[in-house]
Length: 235
Image (cartoon, rainbow, N blue to C red):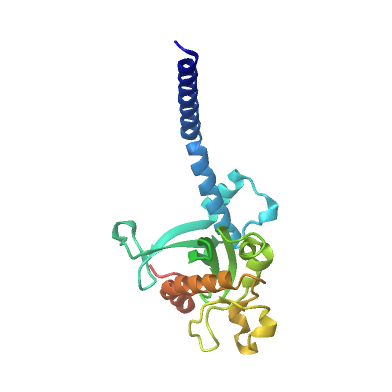
């Protein structure tokens, strides 16, 4: 066998061995990767309701235990009522209910919004009054670091706490990202529905505002039920 042939055979065997090793590693780690994704999702839901803090660095075991003890995942129909698993339809929406002391303390809706460079995924928690935002988290996005990427920072997400999704008349208005500081660019009577914008990331704020409005509008029947029946959710 010539030297050239030996080289090609060696290269081929090396590629085959590396491929087998990578496949084995990917297969072996899949379970751990799926677990980590699930734990991260649970952590963000708990962060949205204020049950855990990012800087507290809770262990995966602590997150899973706390989630199992306090969060109940249900599906709701177009009227905002819980539907049984056997009756779930394609249009029914997932809802995460946070319970403390046997009562509903708040509820969490998944946020899937368009961003400037890709989708933005997160969770928004609302108080059991159906009107007040309890917390907001972003766990996945493709926005530019230092600009639109600021949506994942504590300072931005904490701006949502206490904001209202209804006006003084009780009509739905959602919550939006202002084009600058709320105190400077938003009239006083509307400031409870806006959060400070991110300098240099106007489009990210615009798309996120639209995504929040669409999602909260979809869940408005649920919020109305909470406003009427707080802190109970109709079955």
